[in-house]
Every structure is written in C-alpha cells, then in structure tokens.
Length: 271
Image (cartoon, rainbow, N blue to C red):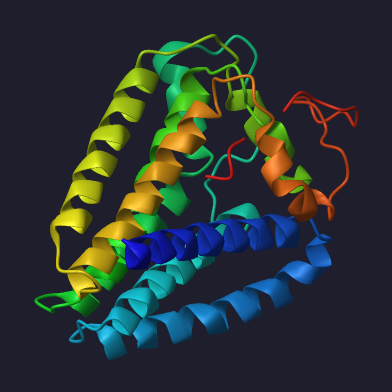
C-alpha cells in the first residue's frame, strides 16, 4: 500500500509541476518562445529515447520512467499549442451570432491542426511500444489526451468556471468560443466515465503483487484519471481552481476579454 501511495504522490507532483511550468513559460514574452520550444524539444526527444529504452522492462523504475516520458511528450504537444506554433487555421474571435454546428466548426478550426498533431503523436508512441511489455508511456499520453479533449468540449458546451486566466494573451481569441452555463449534457458523462475508469484502475492496482510493475503502473494511471475527475469538477464547483497555479501565472499580465480589449475578464482549464 505504501508503494501505491508513493506512486500516486509522484504522479500528482509530476503532473502539477509540468503543467505549471508550461503555464509559466506560456506567459513569458513571445520572444522567449523559441528558446522554450528548443528546450522542450530536447526534453521531448530524450523522452522518446526513454520510451524506447524502457519498453521491454517491467521494473518499478521502468514504470516511473515510462510514465514521466509519456508526460513529457504530452507536455511538448501542449507547448506547441499554447505558444501558438501548432493551433489551427482560424485565429480570430468567434463571429457574432454564430450558433450550433457552425459555431462548433469555427471552434474546431482554431485547434484542428493541433488535434491532428496529437493523434500523430499517439500513433508514433504506439509504434514505438508496439508489442512491448511496457506500454505505460502510451497509456499516460492517451489519458492526458482524454483529459484535454473532454475538458475542451465541456468548456465549449458551457460550464460555470471557464478559468480564462490560463489562456495566454496571444490566444485570447479562444475565450470567445467558450460558454458560461450552469451545466451541459456532456459533463455528467465525462465525469462518470472518468470516475468508473479511476475506480477500475485502483482495484487493479490493489489486486497486483505489492511493488510490481503492474501495481505501480495502475496506480500511476489511476492517479492521472483521478486528476481528470478533479479537473472536471473544478469546471462546475465554486472552488478557486486558479489557486493551484498561482505561481505559474506570475509570468503573465491580466487577460483581455473575448473581444481583445485589455480589461480583466472572468476566469480555460490547463487542458
């Protein structure tokens, strides 16, 4: 049980620290982005090497390494979007009066290139680990993708807490595609699916031999899914999600509103 608890704490620390670092770098002046991307790309390449190096190992250390590598590869994908390198063909606010399917298409055009890049990344990591004993990096990446996609859809459909502070100013137009509503029909499905998967992974972890690769892997993935559940609830509950990331937001100025006017706006998930 102690090993599972330590694995869970490690997953939380890695997720919180890596997400906060990306948020901080995204808030720096754009002239710094090329250097941040260079550093992130070096880390990403090292992570790919780590995935290959551990794909046939089922030791406890290999589990932590593969998990960290999957997190780093996902972090590189996030940096390419939030720094504006890989987004989508539309980089303007939502046209006034646009609703329904047309609004969804317009919103998708703001990030479709990034979503294709995420898919390509998943296929690449899958190819690297195809048939191997250690596929934890792939599952880590896929869970983070689920967190990202589900959170993005819920913010588009409407939730009470949009957390707009997390969006850097050069992507300020994204705020106009968000909707503030008490609830949407996708939210309970997202939370229920994530909660069920979390419970299943916890039971799997507890059923595995103590300290084994399988137990640690399931504990790491269960923690990541638990964080997905937490992220979703923070979209609707009256809780200050931003308090978790205060230190990482110190690099940016107060956000503009959806029209790009430089006055403070209400509070997007770090997804």
